[in-house]
Length: 147
Image (cartoon, rainbow, N blue to C red; front, side, top):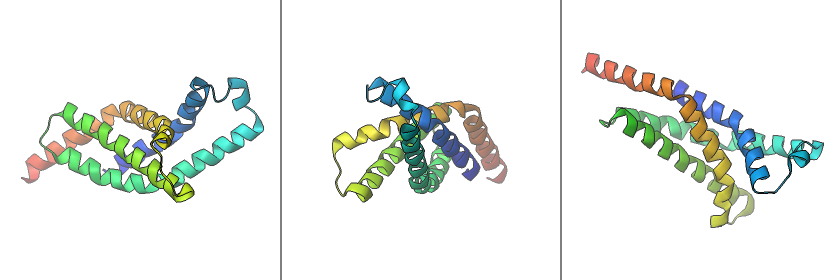
């Protein structure tokens, strides 16, 4: 479970800069030419570094949630949807706690910062679909042999 959660977290953190670029371009915050300036790249590296650092607690909580989800008696699809939902909630919680630590205030508008991270998390989870299925099937086999 820890390896699956770690790999999903790692892939999401690798995808996060791409999603952040897309969000900046879509919202008109930056043009594609602006993003490739040295100052923009430095800011992006800082954001991604802070994001990876502050998302470490979510990694450990996601391991626990993944274990709970895998052990439920739901269908594979329901477990997968629960995993997507739980990961999204963890990202939002992580963003809210991080923003509160830095600004001391939480606004609903601040949740917009979570959208690129949620997108990266969902894409990461979708990319790792086969590993999720293997994890669930392996757990089902383990339960049948030990129970």
